[in-house]
Amino acid sequence: MLITELDLNDKKVLVRVDFNVPVDKNLGVTDNTRIKSSKKTISYILENGGTCILISHMGRPKGYDEKQSLKNIVNEVGKVLNKEITFINDCIGDNTKRACKESKKGDVLLLENLRFYSGEEDGDLEFAKSLSELGDIYINDAFGTAHRNHASTGILPSFFQGCKAMGFLLSREVDAIETFLNNGQKPILSIIGGAKVSSKIGILNNLINVVDDIIIAGGMAYTFIKSMGGEIGNSLCEDEFLQQAKDILFLANRKNVNLHFPEDVIVSREISKTSPTEVASIYNIPTHMEGLDVGPKTLNKFSKIILRSNTILWNGPVGVFEIPNFQNGTKQIALAIAKATECGAFSLVGGGDSISAIKLFRMDDKFSYISTGGGAMLESIEGKVLPGIKSILN
Ligand code: AMP
Image 1 (cartoon, rainbow, N blue to C red):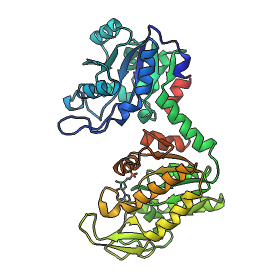
Image 2 (image 1 turned 90 degrees about the vertical axis):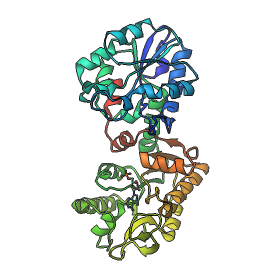
Image 3 (image 1 turned 90 degrees about the horizontal axis):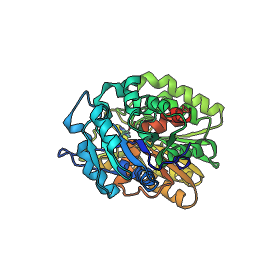
Image 4 (image 1 turned 180 degrees about the vertical axis):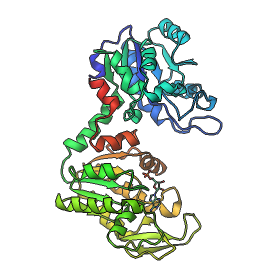
């Protein structure tokens, strides 16, 4: 069900948001994207006569931890919503219940970090029941945690039969992934980068059933290259995944999916901004050198594949973009996808590091959709139904 199908007037609306925002050492919010992403849902509830009771987690605390208290972000939430926010220093219990009950139409309450209670991550029924007593309606707008079967995402919705729905952010995320998986216009391409093959095996196995082309780059490419007999020097490699890499090569070949690997790479003795770099063939990297970015020939080849694609999914940088001398590959890939998008392709970008990269390049408005959830997006593309979504639909 969509939020627009519910009568919110005079209702206490419990909204599970993902305000797990990064903070600096003075506890100031350094990136408010996640707060901004739920603004549409919160404003809609207020405009339609509801009270917003916001619940979220922050970090991975083991019990109460002042540094991970949501009181640290109250001002930022107020700034984004342009509204006074009432912070409640607990998320369950009599005081919280009273504060929610006494809140008025148009109020916004922010409750304390759900993860201060172990019941949240344990998916505890009693904890979920206590949360359920705070509102009349449940809205989930936290895509970033939709893959977790936690109390506030997987269990709490069962207390709101007929009065629960996805917020605008969650439904946009679901639509974007649906467009990619089921309605993508061919040729469909995915670009999978990042450090480790192990975390992307599931997504690669499902992508083979969906796409025409897969570009495999970044640190994870070297396990594949080694499995094909290449000399990868000191590059990142997960030897225990060599067989899985071979299986993916075999499966892609059987299903007529084109796998594309870098040809030339930027190599260096160490990951540092002062270490001299060279260009080498990815199949012949000198010992003591590691591949840290893709080279010019590869970028030329990858850009052509990107520009001829009509649907593009990008997850994971193609080099160590955090260090300026290994940043060019990821930047050029971002530019090529942006250009394809401008020419009409549908582009979906997700995964924490790809998002950090495009923010660094100030290109976060150049793609069709940027997913707010790394793990949640990966699991959706793997073909799993996420607990946080299943519990809304049931
Ligand atoms: P992931 O979380 O698996 O998507 O990996 C993201 C990380 O992969 C980023 O921090 C990149 O610096 C890193 N990365 C990308 N390419 C390489 C590479 N060739 N060697 C080592 N690390 C890499």
